Length: 149
Image (cartoon, rainbow, N blue to C red; front, side, top):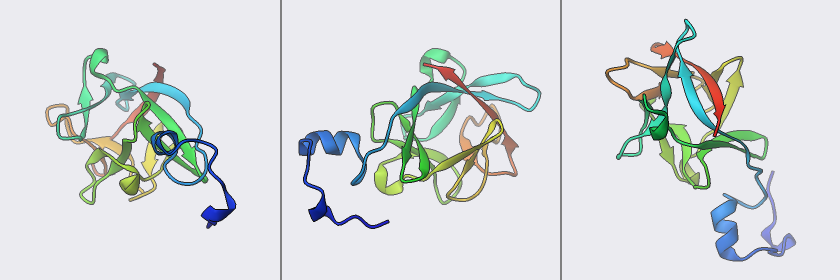
């Protein structure tokens, strides 16, 4: 869907738009949560966190877990760090990280798992020692629980 900008006079300040809306239109913040990562046996391994390089990693302390929110926009569900412009997306090598809007990709929840719309792979973990999170089906696909934040 293409929007003609001249047809939509701004109703907010530029600062407010840039900090709340990724593009023309309005997303809606819903479901603020911490992403609890669970193995196939139902055991919680920890939560989604972020390392100093911006990659999504497994953290074992709830205090280190990110508060996330779903950000639906034009029919796609994005996941971002609450109140930020950092969106969960896989890299070309399937590592999960947090990107600005230009790198944001959508997610689909299928049962208790998350599937990336970018590479059609599920959120996974190579090992608890490695800690990096991936969108790669050949690794251990994780179940997710959205714990209220």
